[in-house]
Length: 427
View (cartoon, one colour):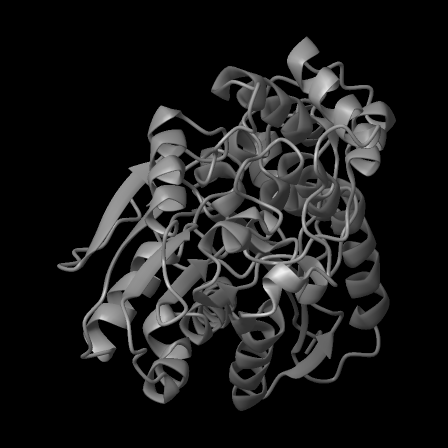
């Protein structure tokens, strides 16, 4: 297989994964089955896919509605009845805080005849940034930056976020009672836990203030004094906990996951098989340090090379972590790929792609990258030291210098990371 053909196949697999999670497609069957309420329909939500979700609802549901959703800068859609606000991600800003406050106000004072349709996708934790009483936006920003650099996984990060919020961890659903609350979620988290997706603003929360404190202690994060005081007060029972699964106030809440990483991986696998490839599926919920997982996947590919009689594709999803120690431009997908490229060490039969399905790897407007059998050789010819760049968390600069960055622009969906390894057997 020629290099151009290998690259094209990997990109086709990624595009198939994205197509399976397009809001207009994955929401259609649920919109078709939704009956209008006797009262008002209020559409709210947050996340990188949420504007596209709102557009799908507007386009496919002919009944009266109104609402407000918040999405990442550049991820908006042209809607007529639902207001779209763009705000910052992954560190929240004032626009996100103000939008979250307005969303909370929109669901107050509703009746039992009203329907709150909540649209949530990955990114909502940062975009729906309404600090708990006594906390400021700057407090939340400082903690968020520390968590992003710490190596904490998404469950741990969102445990903290929920307990610093006036809206997450089920509090939005409580505010909307006695209205019916129906949430449609696009999952970007391992195991598709609704309480973790976007920090579960309409979902019962199983985590506690004490667990949030434990996360900060585990990663040696010293939060602002108001944050520590707030969490300690909650752990001591002086602040009400987030609503738990048995809370009767959540009895009129329904949650449906409309798109998942697994379904996207299965769509990519179908394309690979149609091209004559053997598919090895490693799962949609892989976690751990990105560079270490990349090295492990390279070793897996090297083990398969000798016995491969047909092209083989290894697929996986999930959300790795990066413990930031350097000063480079990095993201978890390029860190994974650089770790994989170094471990593969120029093996002539191995290509790879890793990208975030939202189009943003880390804080860069770059989805991820592709590595090829000659990535290391080309980098060395340019005077780069791949191991030093990995040590400096400089994966984006590594692949950008080779012309191998994967840039999609806003995808308007988000089903977590997509990783594919292509093994082409020797002739």
